[in-house]
Image (cartoon, rainbow over all chains, first blue to last red):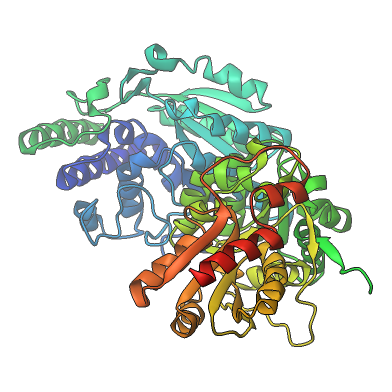
Length: 278
Length: 314
């Protein structure tokens, strides 16, 4: 996909996020929207996956360590053809396979159940280790929240990955700067994030999470790096492209009502129209 | 008379893993800087490339095992019961059990028989914690023979299994030609009519000793060894309770939430029976030689004998 196509896809994914969360009347739109471009790049450019064969053995693995942004992952998987886009409106409904947090047993394309913060990254490290032990060529990607890295388990996992030189692992930190209770800096600052990962023997790349050129370059560098895992610290805007959600911690974990939903979709339509003018 | 052979079930664990390693090339063993104590060092010596020392980070170790299991490997994660079931409880629940991954948890140094290390390392709560998790199999073998059979059965079973082992050498009691291990099946060790003794782990041999004295006093004792606490063999317990109408449970675990509670749950629902729970009361342990602690906390044959005798006659 070229850059414009990626941007258009991300815009569709964002519409799916807002629609799913509105339908669920709960969920986490802010961090889903901030990570939408990262999801898009991973699933439409970077990863070796096949929607028709979600379990193919040589597939690249993805673990959503910040599992609460499941709407972002689901909307991406739906756009990529793992399941129907229409199913997104069943999110968090009783009986739906689209659970509030990723559920590997029931959702095509989900490699690991997650949602309890700090745990997904360890599973991703386990997958990467497994590939190394068996000389399998697949790569492993995991997305963490910047609030999530307050969890000690993240650093246990980072220490292990760095010590074991797992260069088939890419950790992406969605650095939108906000967590439920407010600014990550005010609550318990994890900064400097890059220096911390460097200290754990990671190849660290700082990028703008909404710039596909920078994302492409970062993932390319990650592939080229030997002997070290890569951490991509992606500076993002929480609630990206929905004007009233942008940079507002209140939209970390609440759903838009009908009126807000209309406004949000209008914002996203506008972004989509602007892309069509290009 | 020759001494009864005694082996700690943590040794059985290390030896059984090494045997498995020869047959299964997808068995991997993870440890958290306790390979010498958990006896996974035995496996490490034979298969260094399949032994992963994760350092002192049990939560991460359990998560790594979960990730490995998604790729078709059979990881055995090993630590003391306190850390495997206690510290990493939530990782076991959410990263292993919720996705029902094929991870085996080898928890050594369970119960007060840890001895001198004292209360911080004496886990009397692990069975309670593990049996509340949906889909978790919980096994507490009574001796070397059973422990080795349990490790093999766990490897053959597809799903999460919690295996509980001890530090203290305990008598080998199952070394018989007809011994058979099946997950979820209780073992009727002795038939009797007056009272049912349901024991697990190292308390099985103590209970067998106690039973000899009870029989000498004219009390007819039925003895059941429950190696699998979940899924519990309800049938063997209910059938026996119907016969004796009096049940005693014996375990090296808190009387809250362990074998005693599991047996009471079953009997309450199927055949309400008077039950006495022998175990570690609602207290922390302390430092001391294991054998002395077992006496002090009332889990030795003599204490079991005294309490059962009183209960049988009440």
